Length: 529
Image (cartoon, rainbow, N blue to C red; front, side, top):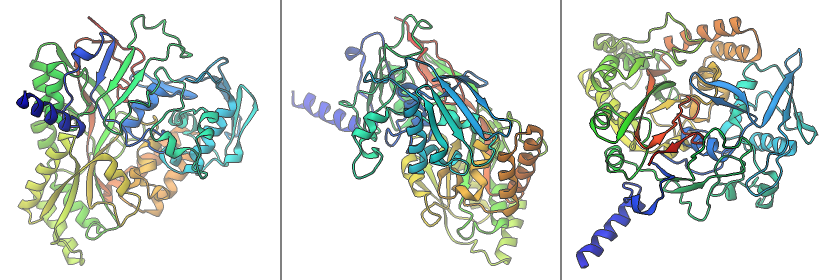
């Protein structure tokens, strides 16, 4: 008995640390799914904008428009449609009647106005797309079913960016405001949505556990799915091997979507599980802090760009489950210049560039650091490969384990941003602005997307012109020109465009992937017996 109690205590401690989830089969019904992917650092969709938050937003909240399918199609959601003035400044959306929030309150235009004004006031999460072109006073509700946006200047990606903003129950959030905080303290661990699933706040534990029971009254209805999931149990597991082992045992029904190749092969060989392979728009990148020496020297950055073994990583480690992407825009999206192949792996060119940087006074000999996401094995594999080749040209690099919330928090200031860190830029909205626009326009410094702290006046001019005009051929030309400059400046190290790899139980049916959300919208999923 004593041994049994000790084992149970140990299991509880490990589970609390997020390293292992105890078997749940005996505790869950056939129509409950256990989702093993990450949870965001908090639950406020106006504070955090990342892939884990997309899982919460797409299931718990709704937006005016939403991306569906692959390639992603932008479809009316809470809105039935929209009109735009000839000058591109006035956008008017008509809402579906009869939509209700989880607490039974009717969703009206005032909730939409409040939600967008809240995003602007908080200046966090999805706000970067709207702050340059929208003032709070420019968002109005002529009537209960109509929302009007008056832009300060034309903004070509405006409709594409609309799905970034979750529509909140304004009455509920206002009732929980404290000290003019817009309800952020309360919403960090609660929800105020209308989505297909609702949050059970009583069981929520930050980054460890979230239960999402089905909202039978969702405005889209359930006729598309006669056997919907009744309860989503989100149970993140931090370590890749432990996460895959849990899938193979049947403790979870889905892993993350960043499986390394050895785990892909394990899942593919196992019975009762499968790997979902989907072409995405998600660029893996090693960010370099361009404002910290020696990374403030372009030749040092070119040195590092030549020292990463791209093909060795993509073919040798990933078994070609990815495609080289030599610049910041996914190659399968307009605006990515076909003539930009990226830096080749060439240690002689790397040495020459480092020698030139040293001659220019850059402190090339100091130890540099690369921060990885410990829960994602690919970031470790990339860093270890990079470390090995840098050692061959006399550069010492330390690998620093970290987590996504820690890293994104650190990027608020250049002084706290790491030398380098590894992550992916996923599809939050389908426009080059999502990648190069918000990554390399210096007005976005202080956000994780712009964490290389790159500054080039000509690039700033091009990107600002591209987002202000509606002529797509001219926009394409500007994005291509800006990409060539950013790559020539070696602002970062761009590795590949993703084939998403997620482990799934065979009992998961109706799984539908979209690059926006990485397949995390579960409204259409059912479970076989």
